[in-house]
Length: 383
Image (tube, rainbow, N blue to C red; front, side, top):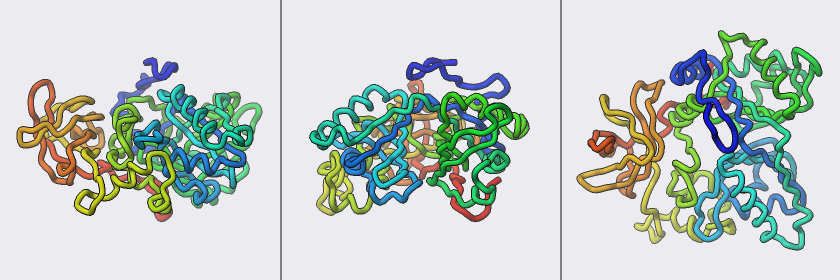
């Protein structure tokens, strides 16, 4: 157990190493307790407009019961205050999730933003932190088959029509009292690159739900997983860790997250930092500002040690940037990393060097994700 954002969090469980837990998630399914994440509800007149001010998302264009990855942005620089998942539940009703480590600054940012957005309507925008809810991530190719037997208010066949990025309010059967949950917000997705679900559940129902899932599936199909496996899975999936791969000193364009900027926001702007970010989208060669640095995937050559956060990246004797995340990849059997390099050195196949413990090791810039994602978008289930 380790302290993390005022919580005590398991790095791994006694029955498996981090690598074994990682591989079990990819081949079977794992339960991750991610209740430390901060769940928010934003509703009332102005909720959509506020989100379109503080993020580059087109909140009003998100279909009901569908989600999108986005970023809270600083007004002047477009730096990333935090990354978040925004789900639209109704015309002016949104659910979103932010990082536990950013809780205090995010809440201060949101309070300030609500006040600045429309002072005369502060009372009409209702922001609620769902501290009375837990968040459970069921991840892996067996996740759908393990959830299906518990469905109380949805036909099992309907689960296959719930695609990546979509959500539904669903009641689940429990093995003990109260024998059925209240309607739970179940979202298809997660931070592992695998198919799966994130289940927002009242804290009073969380324990019995977890026990029901474990007992129904059995240890040969479902086990707990900790922070260690979650980190290696998200790294293989090319996903950012706030405070390492993204921060207030990086913009979405620099971070390789330009795709979170909705198409209609690129012409209209009007979101925090849009003056900076929209100019960054256009290369210098075409009259824009471009960027000085870019986030890239890095594959170290065989025999090289793992490159951790802070390891220098060099090319042709020059310092190009630094590693922001790195670890051995259980799936690939190679050491992989993410980091920022000078613009122009970001293309796939570019040869670089990473300095680990004072020694230079050959590496290559590669496309991300390192391991193909297996989100459920229809077709043939990977399970």
